[in-house]
Amino acid sequence: MQDQIIDVLKKAQGYISGEEISRPLKISRAAIWKNMQELRKEGYEIVAVPHLGYRLEAVPDKLLPREIQCGLGTRIMGREVVYYDTVTSTMDVAFHLGAQGAKEGTLICAESQSKGRGRMGRSWNSQRAKGIFMSIILRPRFSPSDVAKLTLLSAVAVCEAVKQVSGVSATIKWPNDLLVNNNKLAGILTELHAEMDRVRFVVIGIGLNVNTPLNQLPANATSLKHETQKAVSRVVLLQEILRRLDQWYIELNEKGFPPVIRRWKELSSTLGRRVRIVDQSGEVEGVAVDLDEHGGLLIRRDTGLMVKRMSGDVVQV
Image (cartoon, rainbow, N blue to C red; front, side):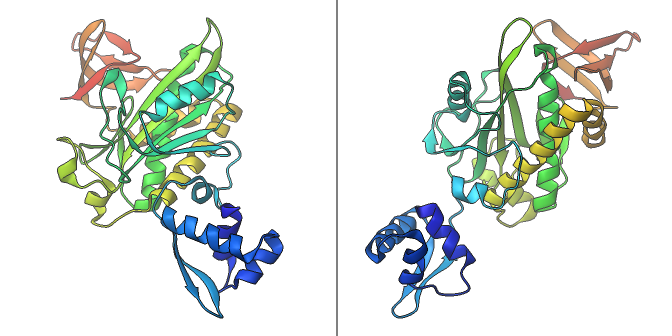
């Protein structure tokens, strides 16, 4: 009911009376008043004037499902939204829902996380109502060896959304970090549930520093507010991320991986650079020259030998 009331208020030109709201919704004016009180508690600024009615002055900068889905227009991403004020980790919730059969494109988002995490078990700074902390469930029809493609696709989508909404040009450090002036703006985490030759579902986690003050971030991190010197709407940005993910995921399914690879290379801050990578097999240093067909990074060592890495910590030297 509250979703319908907000929809009516948003469409209204100026004030709208309680009777005009209650009539099509088939509820009493007392029920309208009660719902208005609840909406105000959520942060909606609703003005009420006797003999004129109600007017919506402002919406809260919260990642509420009704705000995310208003005018979203996606085919897959965000058609279902699960929202939390506080959660341990959106990844944990998404993995649980994925195992229970949640629809592809289901979005889990939260205002804050108590145990937000990044790659290799690292924690993720989750300042309340300052960033975007989200996970999305996908059910791709390809083998587990190709899941790394979704990390690269997600990085492209977030880069493009950030540029569209804020004007900030971020670059991608392989495999999953978005940088602005060599400072970390966002990270992407991919986890999957698979059998030997079949992916049951994949969870893509995105953590993005939006309005976080610099003094509340780790060293070598940044936020969009710091880069632009103004606040950025988290709802508008999240909507654009979902649209870009939707566009690229559909293109991946229809045209394969080459278009994603081409766009990723245009946005990369890793290719052509000397890098050092540390993973379970040890340390490799050389020049990052290309990606392979699965999204692995190809590195040319000083000896001329070409090696491939599918994961690891990258230091650009």
